[in-house]
Length: 86
Image 1 (cartoon, rainbow, N blue to C red):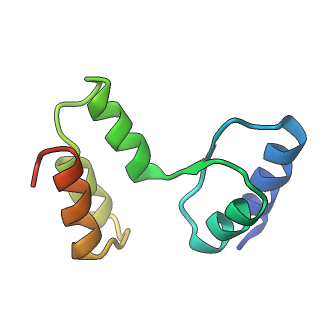
Image 2: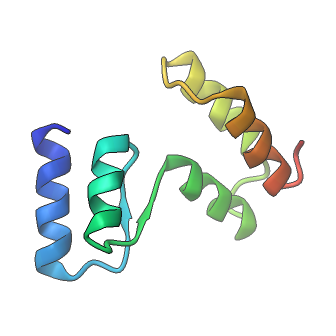
């Protein structure tokens, strides 16, 4: 976990944040241990589709993958099934 994630966690505790956007696994585990509610980039995409802000999640996931972000195929399949794209 780097300094940025650490600062986000400290700020979330200080501000009693209702939700923290964080993707890095170690930071997510720390948040869970501190009972800080979290979501990640994929969670934001799912919510955006549910609210009708985007038409599809899949193109965004593909773009993220093209830029070097790794998600397992099993996870992608689950996400796409959740948003009725799979």
